[in-house]
Image (tube, rainbow, N blue to C red; front, side, top):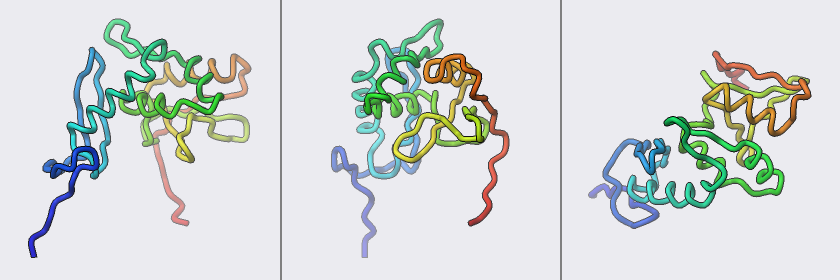
Length: 158
């Protein structure tokens, strides 16, 4: 019996690459997309650009080659129940990550993690400056949060 390869959910063509990551530049921004296994690199790139263009204006821009994020716009949109495309864009630009190790996390009194989330998954900041800016945009300068660098992640095996 002949084994059949995966077909892209976007274009129905066979997915020939084994890697899950698609990396490309668009309008000066560097994208790194975890496209999973069900979409081809071409469709993943097109979807990332569509999502980026939906939220780009007034939200992210480049200054001296660095990505700048308007965290106030992010917080305002998340509080109104929108912003899924913003989180996806920040993941694709490597500003937020689902991987904790080596990243930055905001922790409230308790300690309770108060990072941005998509559904139930917390996101971690890849840059300390973004963690600080998000904390100020969301909580002001109340001093009731801490930013912690996550250098080790362990599981209790429950």
